[in-house]
Length: 176
Image 1 (tube, one colour):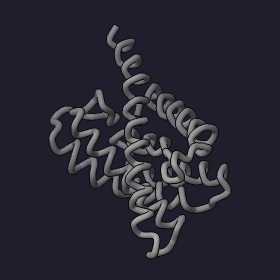
Image 2 (tube, one colour):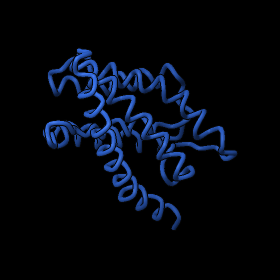
Image 3 (cartoon, rainbow, N blue to C red):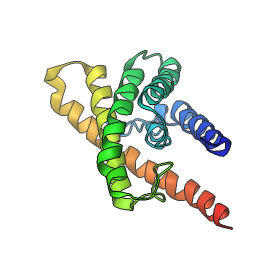
Image 4 (cartoon, rainbow, N blue to C red):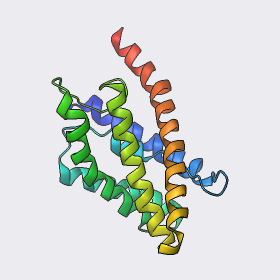
């Protein structure tokens, strides 16, 4: 992994975790929607990252958010589970259909539809795990499902907006 990619990932980590902690953790739309944009960091880690380092990075990412929210363990567990699923879904959805070496999965580096499906699945898995742990009751199954689905859709839209606004500028400036 080259140093430019390392610095890009550190910057992405800092930006997304700070946005989560300072902005998105304070947003509850309709009592059901709480965007978790920082999961995009895990989704966009380089494809060359091994499974164990990936899970350790995800663990540390979730722990950073947990420490700032005083809900220790929920974000950490959900992020670690998503890192495990990421490797499986990355192979099945993105890598399988790409002959080119994809370094960092994004809207601009792989087929648009493939990345959107991959991202939606990761976000939905994260939200299902997180809200199931948060509520921890089968009586609230449909409430958890609704909250996870709505939070996934809003986070997914914000992630697409993030990539369209910030990565397009990076892509255009690197082409010059």
